Amino acid sequence: MQRIKKGDTVEVIAGKDKGERGQVVRMLNAEERVIVGGVNVVKRHQKARQQGGQTIPASIIEKDAPLHVSNVMLVCPSCGKATRVGFRVREDGRKVRVCKKCNADIE
Image (cartoon, rainbow, N blue to C red; front, side):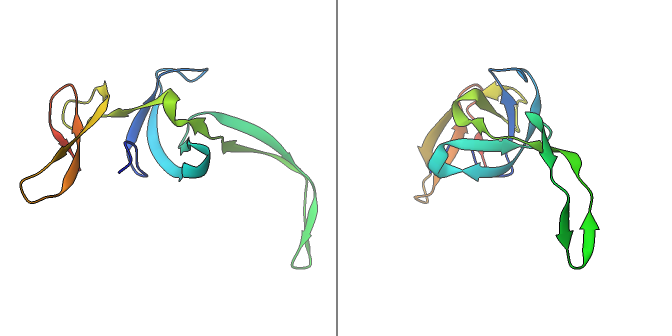
């Protein structure tokens, strides 16, 4: 089970965007990276190209770049603080994530 999943709210704890919060848009598990919406935005130059008989002009686009998973920390939905994540096995046998600050389950 992963500590951070797609859809979680996370806070950046290191780097140029330190302190910013956003939602995980995509997980890159093989590279141990996450893409957080609105955080670590970079500009990329795009060439002019042909698409379906139309010419799309050259432009500069902004996109979210991946962050290493160690540079983000999960924000607990119960207490609203950035926290470490633990695990607990419930009575019904399900393994759930747990907030280390308020001891609440993270669904």
